[in-house]
Length: 181
Image 1: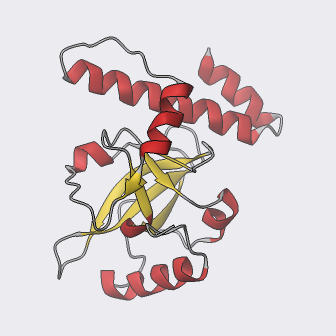
Image 2 (image 1 turned 30 degrees about the horizontal axis):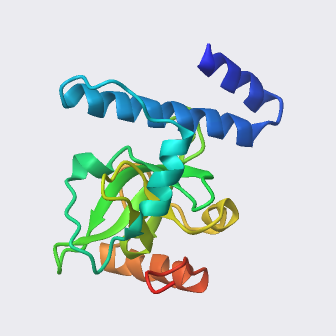
């Protein structure tokens, strides 16, 4: 029923409403799976919980955060004002430092179809202590203008360093709020 409503909205030009429904569905499903993995605790998360998580988020760089890939992949990315920006589809590791360099954000589409994949520097994200979502201080318009990565790969035709220079140049020209702000 929810998916049918989202499809109808999308067909009638209500893309933002459709994306919000899909983002909320993805959030609830991710929370449900996490709850089931941790002993079947009841699902009690909603919009008020999400805003408290957004406000508690801290910059991931320079902090003693440790994340497993399964904690990040699938996690919803939201703006500080609670706009759905997408979800984490993949991680890109820096081969020299062995640290996370970029997150690939899946945007648009419906359940993986017609998604775009945008690489964003890891240092630009904030996370609450629970890592239940990620916060990126940017707009949909800035994400729309970013270069895309093909599904299943960071670089379209080059190596991580070459592609990283392009991605970094874009995000340096469209800065997010850094940890110092």
